[in-house]
Image (cartoon, rainbow, N blue to C red):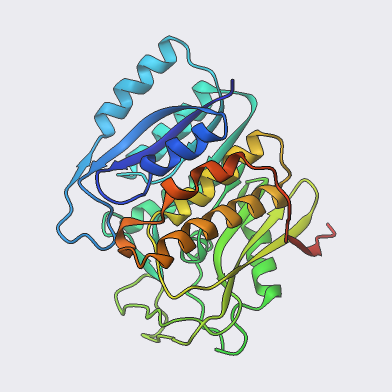
Length: 317
């Protein structure tokens, strides 16, 4: 059985981080070895006054024990980090515990909708950019992609969304940082819901904001090995559930470990997250508690019967 070291936080309330990563990867047949980065009383979205406990010293102690065993894993997957110091611990875990040729996935959790997470600072952006260069695969959302590329948060016309050629350029530039696979989530394809960028945001440009109404979004990816760009569209529902990024990357990682190609893995992840969103949305469940993971988890064991990914470009170096 394959093993994966998962470096992520543990939140008491809300289906995020380790509370979704462990069941998803376990269902996909992977043994999860968690290395907690922080303990939170709840997720950071929708729960005012959440409590946060940084576990950096504990991580260092745990990692020393792992190295002494020694622990050898088939993949390392990092998500929410509690401090910039933890970035080096993630890299150390990959150097010491990852088997040769293993998969190193970095979800550069820093923010969303043009805003940094309340526990993040600008130092983390630079450190996360360094960590992304060590990874096999990175899975930023659009905000995090902009931060990694030192771009201002985009301002597109409501009719166009993000132009496909711009998305291809961003994917290509992110791959030039180092990773073999780059996957950007939450790419708007047309008019999208209001997502104002705060004046204080490091992504703001001249204090401008933008708004609109989106009909669909997409996950877009680049496979450096094949020099191919891929796209999977997602139908929009008027709700935002925390933890969908953690769920997406968990399914993507598990599928890659099973031997799926990048487009098939991202397609499976999109389908699963969409199903979980629809299960929660149909019940009008509180958004801050995340998708209905428990209702849809076993669908990961069902055979893949349809795929919608599309090849959008090939890079000629």
